[in-house]
Amino acid sequence: MKGLIESFYQAFQENDGEKMVNCYHDDITFEDPAFGKLEGERAKNMWRMFCEIDGERKIAFSELSFNEKSGSVRWEAHYTFSKTGRKVHNKIYAEFEFQDGKIIKHTDHFNLYSWAKQALGVKGLIFGGTNFFQKKLIVQTNALLTKFEDKRIS
Image (cartoon, rainbow, N blue to C red):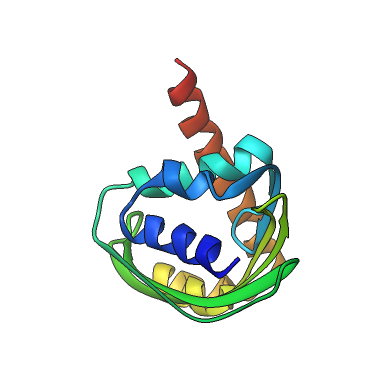
């Protein structure tokens, strides 16, 4: 399964959303603090959307740990948050479950407050650690994803 995880993040480094989603099982469940829980095509479309976003981004991954059923990796993303133009360095711990040679469950853990301070500045410093902020962020990110999906359909 090491090769599967490596392929996933190498594809992200190359902005290849299709190669990324090919690592996912059709019944994928993805979850993180910014999007909440996404399933199936919606989870796949999140990565497609990320790969289509203009701007420079650097993705690095390390500390792969895996067996036939599960795995984990630490990965980092350096990018400019498009809404504010602020630089972000997000450190993520990802956990995976595998089925049929694909990723069936993917959970990204990161410090949302740390992300908010970087991405939003003072607003993130003040509000980034609240449940209200996280709920609002999930609504906003999911609205962006829906807009992306609607554009792909039309």
